[in-house]
Length: 217
Image (cartoon, rainbow, N blue to C red):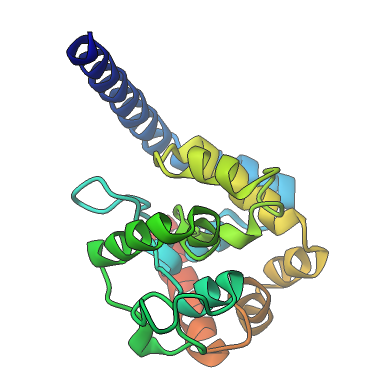
């Protein structure tokens, strides 16, 4: 009986993976039109939306091996676990942000899974998801009631869900909307990515926007 249940579970996961794959193909075929609709809702240029995706994830929410692309933030995990794992898991729980906190690539997801075993809620809040790399602690701004519901929606890489979460996130901050409309990349960087690395991030956004606009001509 258990073997049958496992088989059914594997089949369900396979069908879900295929469904998401088809949706990604469908989304990419009409990406320009979908960005235009999202841009119209926000009152911004489609290229501004595409620039954020390009800088955040190179426009790809999934790693080559199928795992969710993102960054695990040890200082955020520490905040939500109140330092409970500082000594036992120093790779996962750190007092401050630093570039040295990152390990890059699929290894970020591996660290997320390790943190998830310790405290699932805190781990979800500490990882970024999707093309626009929305942090789990921003689940409400992305339109979800709980970190878990946000995680369940974002982890499969469904591009339609991803775009809707991004639009909801931006709409939750009128000042961010205005900054995007003005293409004030420094203000966008500050409001979207926080106070750290504003100059670096704003220059990356500006460069990505210019490149996208060139491709459109």
